[in-house]
Amino acid sequence: MQNEKILVMKHISKSFPGVKALSDVELEVRKGEVHALMGENGAGKSTLLKILAGAYTKDEGEIYIEGKEVKNLTPKLAENLGISIIYQEFSSLPDLSIAENIFLGRQYTKKGGMIDWKRCRKESRELLMQVGLEIDPSMKVSRLKVAEQQMVEIAKALSKKAKIIVMDEPTAPLTQKEIDHLFRVIENLKKRQISVIYVSHRLGEIKEMCDRITVLRDGCLVGKADVSDITIPDMIRMMVGRELKDMYPRAERKPGKEVLGIEHLYTKDKLKDISLSVRQGEILGLAGLVGAGRTELARAVFGADEIESGTIRLYGEETEIRKPRDAIEKKIGLVPEDRKQQGLVLMMNVKENITLPSLKKFGKAGKLSLRKEANRAKEYVKKLRIATPDIYTATENLSGGNQQKVVLGKWLCADCGLMLIDEPTRGIDVGSKVEIYELMKELVENNIAILMISSEMPELMGVCDRIAVMHEGRLTGILDREDFSEERIMAYASGQTAQEV
Image (cartoon, rainbow, N blue to C red; front, side):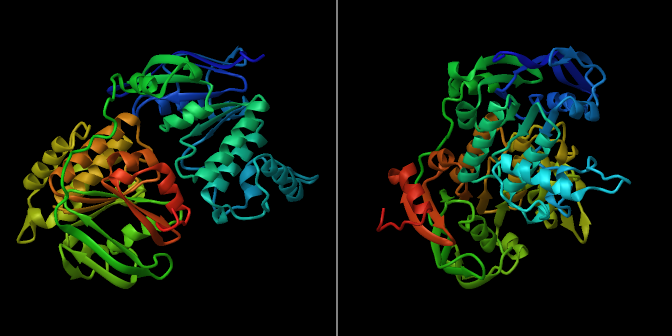
């Protein structure tokens, strides 16, 4: 029973106009295992899973579920066969209750056809208990935290008698405590012989949680392995096709004069007495737990959140930033955590996104020089190594890593000397991460100052010159590179001060 295959996908191929997305790919999943599907962005993972979900039709190949071949797979048939996919963007309707979401389109009815909401709520409560949530199923989903919404999605899958649950980057928005809870839920799913297909760029999690891996690269199968038999460097080599010897490239440099100085900064709801500085050619990391105030600090400097009191200096001179337009005029760029919603206009093309804050540069007498604009966009596409067919490609069609490069290009085009970068590699594959680190290295070599927020400890310790740590809106400590340690950073992040550590 332990090695019984619940899913076999053989010789799967899929083409789109001008693109071979999958070529002769295989995926085998056993009952009650956690199986990692790995690969860089664009490797073919999403296409394969959409075929499994019935959203795409395969061009070639065979699919077997519990030993029986399934032809003409549709979303409804996939659901009936016990396949449930939890995407990064949850499918729940925020204005409906938990129970309404769990049983949407499948509500129990009484005689006469009336919906039996009492039974729906009762079973919803039981399902929520199975995933460790003790909350009222009548509550609107909009009131839930992200981690709770995720548990509702899993409860919904259990309500459909799911045998295979696909989780796409499930830990990306979660705190460590929430991740630990998710892992306990996954362990319980395993005990019930429910299989999990786990998609993540966090290799440490895969090593900790998964039983086996399947690796795709450029639409092809490059390998399978038991997790116990493979190291993280081996995983990286399989995914990118090369060895990444220097994961965190750093230039040995001496920071220059102060670019940003903050003194006793307060905001109404979050920040309390923040003082720090960032110098030319320096990456200052901001560490802290979720809710510590890191993003709020970046937003305040950028003029997106109102400052109650305190001072901001740019290049030694006190300045006032009331709105983002002020920050842009003062050559400050913000790369937000949510690049899709806040950093880009996805329907616009690469050229338009890169030049958006800088259109005045390409105009004269009220007329825009399209040639100058295009040439500048091409310059940054080349400089940042953005993988795009041309500058007129819609930004929504690029991979996550290349979208992030477009956001960086936008602010470089605006000649920004200070970059506020929030979670620079979230949702980006390991190969693209190294490219982003390389770009950041090049920026500081050109005397740009970077304030970088990250929830990934190895990333902070790998690329930063100093790390400032926050807890509940306050600065608890600043560490020089020679003093970096995970223990000290976590102590500060938990509220201990420099005197206590």
